[in-house]
Amino acid sequence: MSITKIITVNIQDLNLTYLQEASLALRSGGLVIIPTETVYGIAANMLDKRAMERLIKIKQRPQDKPFTLHISDKEMVEEYARDITPCAYKLMQAFWPGPLTLILKGNNRENQTIAIRLPDNEVAQRIIRMAVVPIVCPSANLTGKLSPRNAAEALQDLNGLVDIAIDAGQSSLGVESTVVDATVEPAKVVRVGALDKERIEAVIRKINVLFICTGNSCRSVMAEALLRKKLEEKNHKDIEVASAGVMMFEGTNATAETKQVLAKEGIDVSMHRSQRVRRDVINRSDLILAMERAHKEYICRVSPKAKKRVFLLKEFAKIEGDNLDIQDPMGKSTEFYSQTFEIIKQVVERVEQLL
Image 1: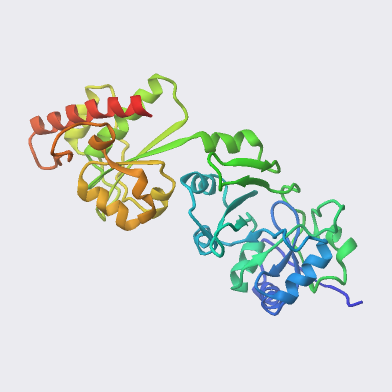
Image 2: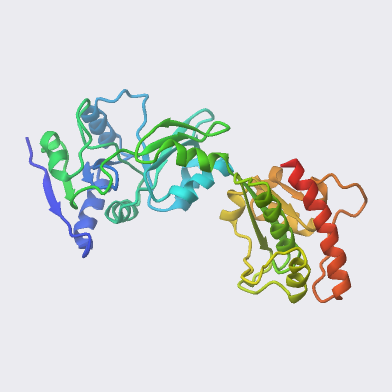
């Protein structure tokens, strides 16, 4: 029986040559023990039949029970999964990188699911990134044995069964990841691990509301501030409110007129800074409320799958009339700002009742 090559790395001063050797072994069909923040795992190239057969034999895993895919960047998830829900994106935002495994709908077959995790470990992330192949990484233990918290524990049973073992010291958590099925609504915790069920369910329950206007300096600011105030008054903590604009510029203050009309409501937006709406923000928003039809169309172009979640603000509030746009007060009189504010105030009151 061959002996596993042990490579000791210093996480404070990573030797990329060593990590390149591990990633090359993975591309060539080898098995490599790598650290994660949860436990040590056996990494293998998901596309290499020989590597997967070796891994299945070591883990004594049924052929129809898949391994968890490990990625090095959040954006990679869309390469392997489809129909990702806002809830799943919220969980990614809250806990990735970290000890959360998400079960999602796979890209390959209609009814196939895939488990994906982004480990919070620089060594693991670098090896996965450098391998440039999809990497699965179950815990580095034989069936029935405890999951290893360091390389020495992993090698007690696996020495000679894998090609390389990366020794990067003790895993920071030493407990396996929490698994959430995000293919169902609401998402469901199916295995409790390093993240407790309460933290996960707090994110699952939360509704993200996003207001959209042009520059995120007046209309969407008013709507966000008003809805947030109403929710706070009712101690409603399961709704998160944000705003953004479709223009390119960012970091500007709310207009002086916006500050003025909101100040009369006892609301201070002096700390507001405009942000441009991005795809990741759209993805994790359960409800997107636009001031104008042009804003709604923009959101649908940026993220076509958001089409069923984006409405004109008046449309969602079931305001009747031919013109559902709320006009931009930018550059207009203080009186026009006040009129715009009154319209938004009335509509937001109806939105709050519908949520």
